[in-house]
Length: 244
Image (cartoon, rainbow, N blue to C red):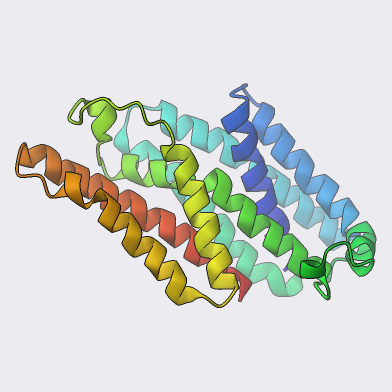
């Protein structure tokens, strides 16, 4: 599973850097570099590993360019390019995970030293997968949500002008927090508690989704909320499936 974990980290780092510094080419270059550095730290230095790391680095580079193009192109179906790349890369990485040798190296030695009680007994492979899964929730989850919303033509009510202006700017922060919370609860065996988080979000949005005024706007907002929320939850629960 070492290759899969490194792929997830590379994709996540690319999106995180882009969310902080929207500089052309820089995010995907940093993401590709993180793939190579992690590979060396995990002692993945055989010929097969080097080929795999090179392929993963190319995929990470392609992901960065595809996302930029998908959001920048006016066509609605432009979003399917990065979505298809992400899905294909994930499927191939999962299928090839049985070929990946166990990771070790400095990462394995660090884990063996017992740095944190929560990491006691965690293998290097497992650590890479955990790191990638949790990093994926921070920014890549938002990217995937926005890509799906664009590919389906679902409007953003705020940008469309259908919803009243708001001073609240925490939407892009609440999504990652929600996904990390759900993933952490699921990893802790508290799947029922994770479902309560989902239900609570629906209750908090109920007043604006049940307004009798401007029904067309309400319908559009409901579609936007439901589709975006379900994709966001799918990212968290899909990551949990990879970890079990």
